[in-house]
Image (cartoon, rainbow, N blue to C red; front, side, top):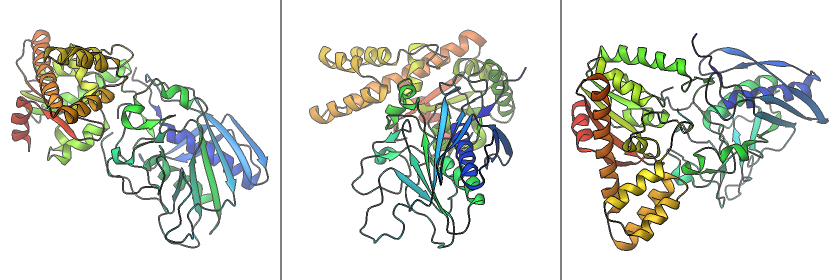
Length: 431
């Protein structure tokens, strides 16, 4: 049986908002609402758990996440949407030197999102839009607010392609472009010209669930993100999905002898920016070991591993299924490589104590600045070399095939950290 797909968090947030708006405008307590996903272009029915009018012009609706057959920590988590009509739009009509209200996003009308592939936990590259867009005076105005449990982006400089900074504000709500477009498209059809509403999205369990994610490594704290480029949650970590990934790989292997493996959306988006043909990209999710072997069996000659260092460095420790539910070992692997290069014990202890791979990278960078050293380059060069070696060995041991494997690692800013020597050679063939 094929794994069952579900929907991403933005879809459930949007459904709750639509139900709350219908309660305000028509007094209708709905148990299901229709949502236009936009990506893909289809209409789906989403169940509503509860709806209540709080006061005239204000209603709250609740739904629950269903990500399908996926290992997803948001499964069955409640999503609340508070909709208030007649709320003044933050920043609307302000003078140029006025400051919009912090943590509020206004979209009018929606802006298309950059096209990307179909992420891992994700993290997708699309930036939040935190400004008023459009000038139509008679268009509906929708304010989107991140409430409790919605994460905050603490460093906008770390968000690729971000083109807006809220003045004097250190944070922005982690409500990304697809979620905003989805909310606007599904809400504005029920609004009269010039009508204004404010939508506050709340994830009561978001702050607690965020502690089990790598969000902090990507600059999102105090909650979960409403992110994604599509409304469909593909069950990439469900066992049945491996068969689908194998079929896709087999199709590409018939076309190309050189392929590029990307764990998630960031790699799929960044690789083409380096000139790599999108048709060569293979989304592996966490099934790296199985798909490396399958590539060898299918006669692939070269594989470029292209991904976030905090995920791929597991391969340097011989961990070839990279989902955190099964194995981790990142800090141990990183500390071991630092020790092998001769870093002093206090530095090794500090690296081992870092909560994330990104924090360890930051510590090494700060050490390089203080000591005018090049530990980051030296450490990650050895890690990339070990990933190459172990991957080639893994393929040979399980398929008796020789495949050239190169590694490109990038950081949370999607800046390239290192390219192994083999990766540089493969890139010369691909670009």
